[in-house]
Length: 193
Image (cartoon, rainbow, N blue to C red; front, side, top):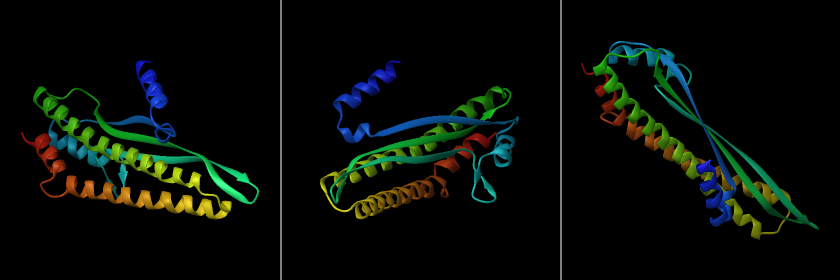
């Protein structure tokens, strides 16, 4: 309840650009079992969320963006009246189906803290992407022209922002998943005996 009040107050004092973006976050889990770090890693490879056609990931961040756009027509002119975005983020993480040995449990908790941090960064990048896209299209409210051109311009702006942020997502993953990167360190920490 307190979080809702804070979010509502933030919308009241923040710029309208921030209030036109709603975010929902959902967390899903899949169960794994194992008595060693290596066994847990194998279980994640078998049961983790699909990543591409054949590969599986240890964890995953999916997001979907929906726009509710309202155009205001005046004679033969058209302008953007409102553009509200809804960002739906779904995090998917592994969870232990049964308690692990004490030493492994400590490593597992540290491993999962790093995995959550990685996935939440993907979520923050997606959120920033939607905020930037929203702010960028609000500029269309000042321009009057035929709705067809306005709608095309709206789509081009959104596509350009998405492309820029998807490239950032890919660079982040390249850095994190590269040799000697954070994911390598997390796996080493989990599997060392």
